[in-house]
Length: 165
Image 1 (cartoon, rainbow, N blue to C red):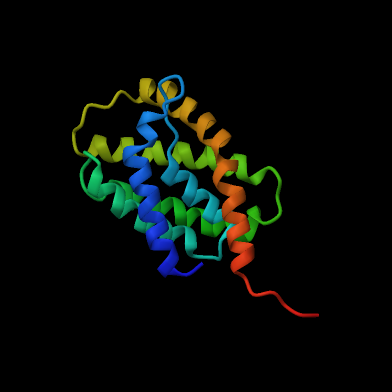
Image 2 (cartoon, rainbow, N blue to C red):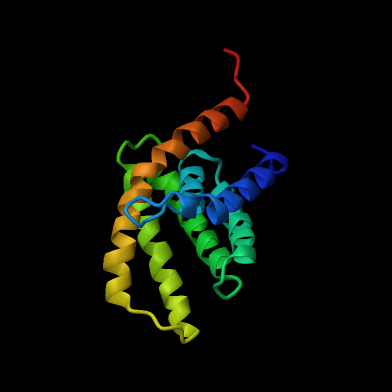
């Protein structure tokens, strides 16, 4: 998938994350659509695409969030880099990789954001935030992953040139 298609696609994801996702809360929790897209791209995309998407989505989300600018960019880019590293080693063709990757990415995302907020002297209750927010969010993100993973896998397979035998 080229950047000409991915940038508007990622802008749409960031807009949906900021405007539509908060309206669709499940038991008070909402999915992190941007994180799901970065993880799904790390699972199905070419090496490097998850980090690129994490950076682009992070910039778009930083423009709309009330957090200090750069937090989403830094965290989503790091998660994209980790997904790109794991792609060559672990993810390709592994059935249990997507749920494990999504749960791990949710925990890494939230821990890094809480750590950065702590550095900025924001009041953070680590135990409460990790148990009451991150744990349910990890489960919800994992349940929502197939809604992004399979269409993205189809797009990437369709975009690859077919080899004639």
